[in-house]
Image (cartoon, rainbow, N blue to C red; front, side, top):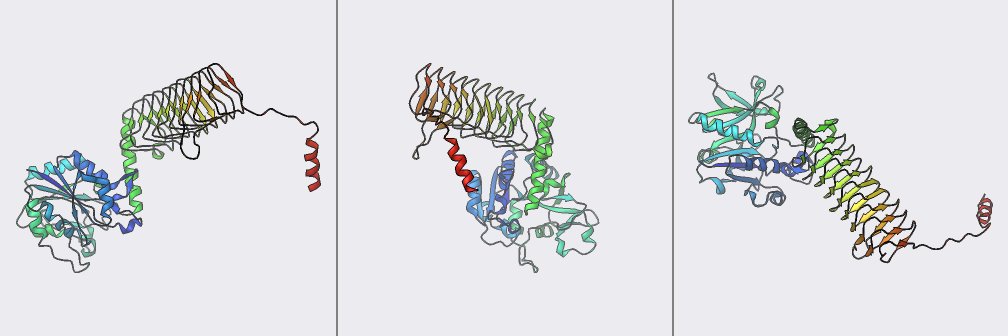
Length: 459
């Protein structure tokens, strides 16, 4: 029998106070809805339907054609949201897994456990519940004297004894699909808010069908997050979970509460990560590398025994035994070779360097193909932009570039070249040459006294 997921993601998220729809808000730089859909895709569920409404184009851009969509054009409650999916699901045989789009911590192993429990117990409706020390704000699970669930009572409708109930509704359900749409059509509009509550389906079904619960051991898994404080709680939970996983796999993380690692980051054993470091995207840290403190690496590969300190690296690659930083910036497919040194306030953009090359401080290397054992002196720059388009600088092996050298691209510097400090080099330099491109120094004897006199006259 097929299984369907119905994700309720049409809400505005007014309490977020942002322009994004609630379920599109990022956690660890990934939209909330993406966590849910990715986990459903890994579960035993066969088909995903996402209910969209407010700014639905944003949700469609995020999810593309991975799911089918149902539209809830008016926000008239969870029961109305489910009914919006009738054209897509009503006639199908199987079981439907209903969950909110703001529940990013529910992972596929838990989903599969809920499904197995539902099937093994022969339930028509399974309500996923949590036990909270402080259940305020949640719908309470009401049972009869035999322990059978008879209803879910929302907080505002609870009497004093019902408010003491610790077991609450997570807003996750597993239900026979035919029965779902049969009974959701019977739900009446509430007098208090004028909305249709999906929770009423429990009252409608419990006398004629088998209704049971599945209790989450960790209540955080069933939490929905609908304000920015909640987002910070979810992010902290995910960050701690991810960091713990890496540490158990042989990664040393110093002050892990300050380290943020994305879901798709791959880290080999023997890596050291220092405080205030962020690793995101498809970043890979190879064995023995060291990153941080105060570093950000996105979609980049750091090879064995490289060291990154106080630096930002985006869409780039750092070779084995290379040091980067402090305060370096690699971006736009910078590929740094083995045994390099990229030092203080050096920026490398869309360039490659060979083995043993060094740029120790205050350099810009852009759109350059750099050989091995090249030394960039302090303040040396590849001048790659003519105001219209970028040009390439070619630098051969064993080139010494003096301080404050400007290389005006397009240009080719051949092997074994020396470039004199202070030069602005505009022409290709042949192999083994010394290039000097600067004005001749002129010393004017006793001329400085005129400046001293002018300065004194101003006083």
